[in-house]
Structures are given as structure tokens and as C-alpha cells.
Amino acid sequence: MGMNGKTVLKNSALSAGILLLTVLVCLVFQRLDVVQHIPMIFVFAVFLISLLTDGYIWGIVSAFCGMLAVNYAFTYPFYAFNFNIPANLISAVILTTVSVITGMLTTQIKRYEAEKAEHERERTRANLLRAVSHDLRTPLTTIYSASSTLRTKKHQLTEEQQDTMLKNIEEDSEWLVRMVENLLSITRISNAQIELAKTPVILDELVDSVLTKFMTRYPEQNIRIDVPDEVVVVAVDPILIEQVLMNLLENAVFHAVQMTEIEFRVYTLGKKVIFEVADDGCGIREDKLAHLFTGTSEDGDSSADNKKRNIGIGLSVCATIIRAHDGEICAENRKSGGALFRFSLKMEEMTDDE
Image (cartoon, rainbow, N blue to C red; front, top):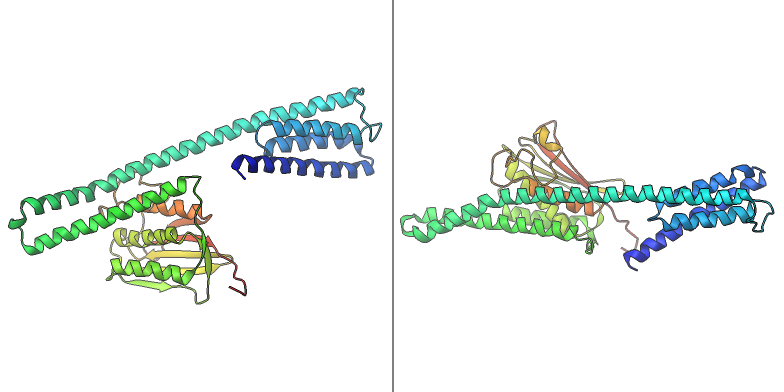
């Protein structure tokens, strides 16, 4: 069923449900001989339908149905239509007016919210574009300079100098590949027509995959691991969640000045799985915490230790991926020193067969 079909089904079911509940409530009022409040109950029901549904049609239809119900079941002569009574006509006019006014107001509010959301998306895209431009400039310049020097002055360089330049080219190229992967992930998630490929994943397998890749890239990095002993299953897009964890771990490597150890902790809390990546480095400036996941730093600084890799893009990608999984992500400074990044995901229920 398409989006329009789902919207029509939702609006019709909502309208029918509210009207049915209203009729039942009014029947109770009728049995209690409090019929003078019945028209107002229908007015309130029409108001709710107009408020909760899309457009004008559902409120107007519900106003017409409410008018017929009041006329037929709740005014004399009972269980018979009589349109000659002025009170019935006034009720119909009031119900229709309420539905139209409410529909106009809600339509304007929804239009405003849509424009606000589009403005926010444009601002996010602009932030990402600025951050990408900032992040790409230094590694591309390094690659160009090193390759140009190797080509034109190769015989003037020692073998050690050539190896250093080639290593810098390799590292910057790998970083650019990961940058492109991050941008592709944002583009993929931002496309409303593409749904996340969520599959049940055993937590240990996910963590092992991430740590294997991380230790291959940073074999000398000291990392302390704390994961649950029991089998935990999460429904996620494993490639994207691995990307989040790699971004957070690499963020500590690149930006945590004077860091000696990374702590990677995973634990369960209720029906959620909590992931934490912490370091004992320099921490995060307080003025940066509020906009840490927006795509760029507002002051345009590169990073705490002035390294070439900007903190913005990777964390913006992390936030986009986690929110697409209906999770939450945050960052804070540890009292003992250093930064802590935390995100949560919903835990899957395990059956006996599984």
C-alpha cells in the first residue's frame, strides 16, 4: 500500500474511531438523562478529528455525520430524522464551522512545521558542506604535494623520506575513503524511499567485527573492553552501526589529546543496549558540546589538538545513523577527565527456538 493509501486508511480509521466513541459516550449521557451536553460532545469530537487528520475533508465529513447522529438519535423525535427543528440546523452549522476553522489552523501549522523542517535540513546540508570543504582541503593538499614531490624530486629524496611520503599518501587516501563512506551513509539515510536493512545481529559478533578492523588500523592503541557475558541481539543495519562505532573510536584516536587508553563498554538497561566509548584525554570544550553532532563546529576550529581531521562530519554521521535506528546519542565530559560518547539501541526479544 502506498503512502497515500496508508494516510487515507489512518485518517478514516481515526475519524471512525472518534465518532464511534463519541456515540457511545452520548448514549451513556442519554441514559443518565443529561442530553443537553450531547451537542457539545460532538463539537469536541469534530474538533479532535479536524486536529488529528490531514486536510479539511475528514473534519467536514465528521461534522456531517455528527449532525446526522445528533438529529437521529439524540433529539426528539428519537431515532427519526427531523430537519425542521431550528436547533438541529444550528448544530449542523456549528459543527461544520468548527471543522473548517480547525482544519485551516492545523493545515497552517503543518505547513509551518514542514517549512521549518526543510529549513533545518538546508541548514544541516550547508553545515555539512562547509565541514566537508574544510576536512577535504588538508588531506588533498598533502596527497598532491607528496605525489608531486615524489614525481619531480624523487632522486633527491632518501628512501626513508620516500617511505614517509608514501605512508602519508596512504593514510590520507584511507581517510578520504572513510569520509566518502560517511557522506554516502547520510545520503542513503536522508533518502525517504530507502529503508534501513535491519537484521537481528548478535552483539558479540558486531563488537568483534568492529574491534578487528580497529586494531588492524591502530595496533598500538590501548583499548579496554567490557561487554555482556549473555547473548544479546539487536535489530540494526550492521554496516551502519559498525560505521558509528568506528567513527567514535577513531574520533578518540584523532582528537583526544594526551590520551593513554580508550574504554569501550556495552551493557543492557531494560530493553535497550547502551554503547559507550570513553577516553582519558583532554575532553570536549563546553561551548562545543551543544552542537557537537550538527556537522561542524560553530567557531570553525579543526579540533582540540589542531589535527587535520575535523570532528564534525563523523559525529554528524553517527547522530544521523542512530536516530534512523530510533536510538539516542549524546556526549559528555567525564569527571575523571576525558570525553564519553554514548548511544542506545533497542534490544530484540529472544525466543526459545532462537
